Each structure stands twice: as structure tokens, then as C-alpha cells.
Figure 1: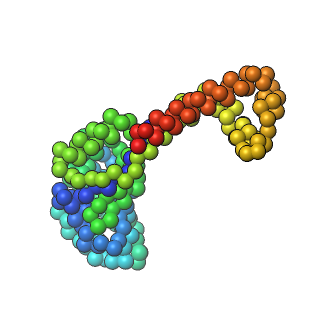
Figure 2: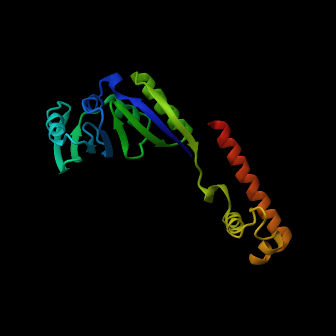
Figure 3: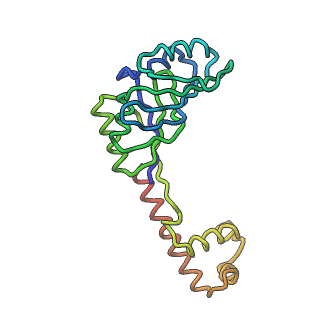
Length: 212
């Protein structure tokens, strides 16, 4: 499944949290969790700042913050739980049926968003950002997969066993015959298992590389 990292400019749509972060340009803010609600999402924010007192005062005075509770506060970090209005950024995420992987990092007005979703949902998110006029830049796009779906259990057992025993090393740490004896199968059966598994792995690798 694809994983995409995006840089999203929240200041372009006057996102209140993005705008707030620009007042602390050298500090890092981390959205640790968000609970989706129909009108007023609940969120947990970590502010890594040496200006904690000023940040808390500014945060609590923000009209879009409907309620807030400072969970932790020291000279380098503030942890605050709050409810807020639905912003255009949050609306784009929810409208595309996506959930970001936390933490979402915010620095000087720009959110670093990570999503793992189908190509269709990622495309929907890009469409929603476009409709809202929110600029974004793709930092990276990778393709991951579940090995249990790519290979059968037996193929996965053979491939991992071959790797562990040095079959793919140069020079080889073991021969195909030794590998077959280890798994108590005929040499030809071991060869077929590895060949089919290697074929699936190579096809997945090539398909993933061409989609980047």
C-alpha cells in the first residue's frame, strides 16, 4: 500500500494553528492525536518551545480554540488537549476518507502529513486539497506491502530461510541441496518454491518503482 509524505501550507488558507506556529518560527509543534467529531474535533498538541508561557496565553486566546486543558508544561515542552472548529485542512482530510499517521509535524506554517492509503484515497485527498486551494508538495511516495499477501506462507518460509542461511550471499553460505535438506523437500521442489517467490518479489519491486 502506498505511503506518501506531504508538505502542506496551512497559511495559504489562514489555518489558525498554522498561523499560530508562524509566531514561533523556530519551534516545532506535533499533533499527536485527533478524535473526529461532527462539529468540534478533539486534539492533542505537543509544543516544543522555550516560550511556553507566551504560547499558552496565545493559544488560549485563539477564537477557534473552543476549550483547552494544559496537560503538561515545563521549560521546553507544553502538552495541551483542546477542541476546535473544523478547519479546511481537517475537512480535506476527512472529506477524502483518510486518516493521517501521527505525529503530524508543524513548523512555521507548514504541516508534514503522512498518509498510508490506497491510490484512490490518496488521489481523493489531493483533489480535496486542490478544491480548498491548499498548496502542497509531495516529499516522498513509497510502496509497501504485506509479505503475507505477496507470498504464500510456505514461500515466505523458504525465502526467509534462504536469506538467513546465506543462500543469496556471495559466495553462497549454503547450496540449494543443503537448503532442500534443511526443509526436508526434494531439490526440485525447493527450486520451484524459490523461483515462484522470487518472481513475485521482483514483479512487486518493479511495479512499485515505476509508480514512484
